[in-house]
Length: 567
Image 1 (tube, rainbow, N blue to C red):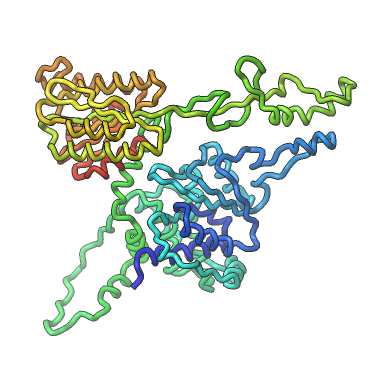
Image 2: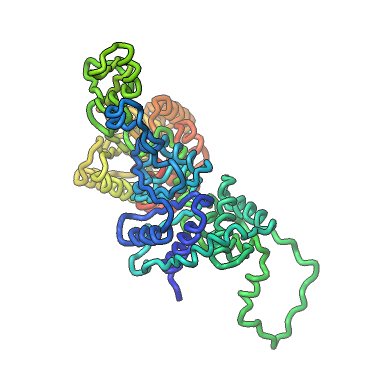
């Protein structure tokens, strides 16, 4: 009996073989896997399957000159004429890109445009992201037909991939003669719609993979098994909802009941599965591929896309001294500006013959102010995650324990990043900053252990204290994000008086004030059932709303991590 890991590895083998048959039509593979022996075996299998094709490597920080070609400065200066270099995107090829989760939107758009064209380009994106929110940009992922996640794949269940070069060559020759029945086109479109896939590329990519699968099997017509494989490899990983069973019409008449001594055949289940309509068989195959926690992943991912200004790091600041290098920009020398000599020479090189002819001086280099290029860098500020925890009597003590555990889990990861964690508790008639922004794990655990519970719910006071702390952190150069954990039953106003109506109005006013200052936030409903009105408060905050009535500390930590897009 094969295990899940062995079945997953068999599908990887089939995915690589189908991709090697028709790389341009499939667009590429999004492979999510950590660096290690499992990924090495996949990469070795790819190189084996793609023998004879042009393989080119690129880095997620590659510049436009390397992508599209540019001026060869040394050759231009030596020959006195413009000499251009060829770019990586020049001509058909399979591009291999490690650290694909670091691709910037600009590069993703350029690669997506190149894949959409008729240049015969395809991309293998090795996604090494350690966190759920470290993902390939959507515009690029949408163009890669095959999505494979091997983060949980064990080495013992990942033997060497078996890829037959002769069989692949025969399949490439057979592929132009493979036909797709009209019914298969309708079935793929319906399956994609029921899985909540909005992209029209997905069913087309699934049909392309089904054709490659049929060619690999030596068939000239796409069969049901080929469509099933296409659903598993292309459509199921893109699912945004769990498909509901189709409503079957009631039978016209009651079937005759079998006699008591009659026995059901051993293959009754198989017969029932075979009798399903083709679309339902494909839906069942997709359901088998969906992870059990799909809804939780989708909810957290939806919140991450809704979170304003949450980009996985602190606020970006451009300068000319330190940080990640950015493309040089035209400018004037002076002050603290640093000249990019190579970029300046590259900009001036095409104009040298004209300038030398105009000036009559042929023994020197002519640089004008318009040629000057200045260095620029991008650096990010530290981040402060401010937890506003409801410690009132309406919030169960068990929920406080989960909040404490979530904060400890997040802080344990802050050492690998540049994050600070702060804690505000509100109860009784006011709020208290129990922990200012810190990275001290010992201090945090001590303060968390002292977090009391009970009393009224001064939600507005908690939001006010959070806004003041966020402004203070911002003044120190940090980027503040807020995470509110409450059951939403505000009953104490800003003056500390028990007045439910005024408490709600004060909380709304503070939420709008926080939103006006542009702080990204998240509202987690910790009640045992969704609280009426708390989603409206999240709207006033401009923040995603997550109802997590049965979440433990690890689930709370994952929700905050995904929704505030921490990486």
